[in-house]
Length: 178
Image (cartoon, rainbow, N blue to C red):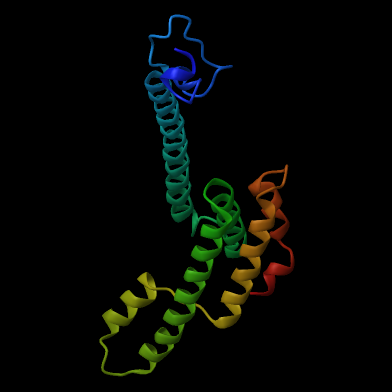
């Protein structure tokens, strides 16, 4: 064929003369190579998707465990530290920070409204009791201490001791200001 067939002397091996050989000059390796490359990329994408699903499943499980955890411990700050540590470890630090901030904002907001509801006389007592039992707010000081416990939890995520032991430093520590 030589130069008379085309100016591109390596067209028959998709311009990859070292990686592909066509001794008879009859195969179209370009198409096969492209298909193999696409299949390999699809497999890599599938593997990443599978890992992401497994990670999301672990994260969802951790979030469920964290929701069940609150109220179990006599020290609320320990629970905050532990929750922040577990979420930042199994999900992401960003999600742990955002959830912690959202919860403390909610607590401050509900605490503000609880104080207002208690002072209103026309709201039935049963409603006030339901609000106190189901929608618990907090003071700004409570939320500040919860934020500090959350920060401790973020730093515990990398501890070789694990979340529980690392957050144990809170028990009886400076967090008892409450």
